[in-house]
Length: 465
Image 1 (cartoon, one colour):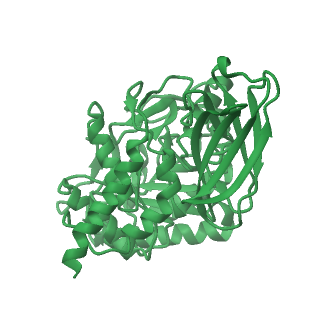
Image 2 (spheres, one colour):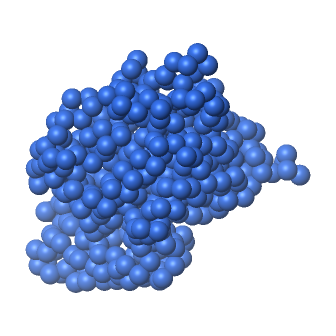
């Protein structure tokens, strides 16, 4: 019976995903960031990218075609939960009116909603437009992850415009990538500083972007690396390093960074937990996005003792989560990058808040991707999964297919960020901008994600696996 259910399940999920993505029009994103909800005559703006339980939803509808200005009529707002009406709001259209503002209080439970605006004239409907939003108890239930990686001089107008553009994509969390001074001492001691790659960064810009992200309903997460240190720091703390069989230090990027010992009892772990607590306390991030580089799996400490790195990661994560929850419970969310799906089987059972898996060879097929998502869900006790994958951006059908497949299997895909950039490389500042791209946070996906997630993660494996 399971064999006969699998093709049906796959056809249903992919059919649903493609029907959703099929209505996501392709748009040339510009610096201003057009509204993702823009129809031929109406634009819908939500005040936030996502909403917590108990938060009111403020919706603005703007008429964008002057020839449709009315002397009499009305603007109707229909709010749907799946196929069921949740609310119907209506305001009069005064002569020459271009903007209507609505407020709605959703029920106090998690759900996705569709929004449809209808401009009515004396003889019937004249224009429509659609959008969507969701309500969650916590954004980690369905993380729609974006990124920021530029922290130069502050420009209020352009930065606000960029964050508004991200909010229109319904991104509910933002990874602040390479915002830090040094991996071992992330918090800078001056307002203007130079990072390890020679970029000139501004602490005030980091703070302002954190505040701006949160204002628009996106949780800011601080990127950190679990075992990376500068050469200068390694030279001062060789007893905290990791070594190969020959006793040589393990590095990353031909000596750009050195790999330190994440095991329990290591001075490195104690040092970094203090530094990470300082990050959250100083900048008021929502939590930590913890990275690693996919190796080594087995190494040796300075005394020649074997270090099993995967288990060391897991205990490191649990200790970090515990310390954050004790001292800053409202800012204690963490996730961890399983590079090439390692060590996902170990860390999925840790106390982190959601799975984050960067897909590399030997995982190269859609079947591999399905297996990764399904296994992460099962091993983590039902936590959400974010997939990091970097397809060839000039090929839009590839992007659409990948997004549809990930969505159809209950996960989400980190790919969009500030400056209307799309990820093309694991080093996030290397982004593709100005392309015609699929709006990955588009309305049908948002509206139906809970339904699809529940279906995808409770059905038997498909033929892809």
